[in-house]
Amino acid sequence: MAQQHEHFQLSNHLGSTFIVLGLLIFSAHLFSAIFSKRRIPDVVLLMGIGIIVGPVLGLVQPKDLESIGGVFSSLTLLFILFDSGLDLSIDTIRKYWKGMVQVTIMSFLISMAGVICFSHYVLHIDWLASVLAGSIVSGTAAAIVIPLVNQMKVSEKARMVLTLESAASGVLCIVITIATLEISTVGNMTAASITGMVFKVLASLLFALLLGIVGGILWAGLLDRVRKLQNSMFLTPAFVFVIYGIAETLGYSGAIAALAFGVVLGNVEYFRMPLLGVMRLDRMQPLQLEEKSFFKEIVFILKTYFFVYVGISIPFTNPMELFYGLVITLLLFALRFLLLSVVGRENTKSERMVVSMMIPKGLVAAVLAAMPERVNIMAGHNVIPGATTIKYIAYSVIFCSIVITSLLVFATRRWFERQETTEKSTD
Image 1 (cartoon, rainbow, N blue to C red):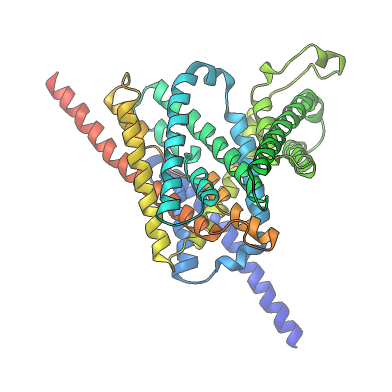
Image 2: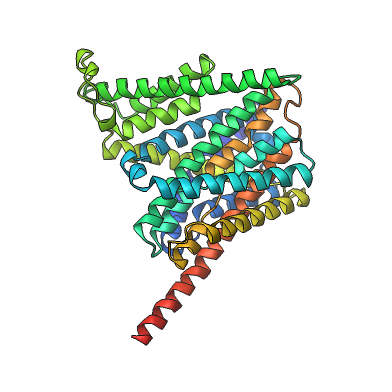
């Protein structure tokens, strides 16, 4: 009888879990539609769900999800990078690279320097952990920036610069964070050991890049034959898993390999070469629209669950970490406004205003924020002091930056409408 009762409880629990998971997907699509019409970012609403079921009602605790957090974070990061690589158009980069470099590099470096100094001198976190904090929150979120920019009246140049920045800054965040985590694993650091580790990290990134490119060329050459197989849609992400796994097994960066793989498949025409004809790989094929849509749906689902997880993990029990996250967010906006008031003077005032407010943090920052703590768990001791503090402050920055960006976009939209009305009345 007791076994039957236990089985009944387990069935009820599983049933409730599947209902919640299904409702989350429906909610995510509804929130996405709201984002399109009302400019309220869907990730804010998803995080709101996490806040309700976590800190508010206490139905789920962050520790309940720790067992799947590491694998889930790696899986999400893998698909983010692959999808980002697909969207990185070499043609677009060649056309707008000057504006992208000016905004992306300068903004990233200034933001990172500001967060490093704040983390070290105010939060009293050591320099290496401060670098991690800076690299995690200095990028922008493509999933939020691109839809917001597409709904605003800005020039093509400003739109493309912001789009490229969101993709490139995410890559910078990942590369610097992974490199810093690698360096942090070296005990008793000396100048020689740090130099050796830097070369090791650079070699790891280079070989991962080459592995991703070779894998992408190989797969693009085989795609024409692969598509003839039954139920072949998932074979491309399966091959991404293989590339990622090979890179990690060899001690390289699987994340960078996945990114390079996506770049090749998104820009096939740049990677055709005579040697491929000898290998019978000269019929390279780009991904079709339905295949790209399939991958974006996977990213959408992962994003849905991940931001609910972030909402659950926001440290409402520690108001100071929330406060520090808000202060860092305001600091990042202040630095961005200061930068755009100095550079890009050839652009209009309205364009500089739009570019200066577009610094919401998103999925890349959320995934990276959990990595220092995971390194500590795998090492069995505090390799990175303050890793949990970094995670919670980063989650707070994500939430605050998205909310502030949304409010600024709403206010700017009203200002643009008044400007248009004034101009029409003058005419």
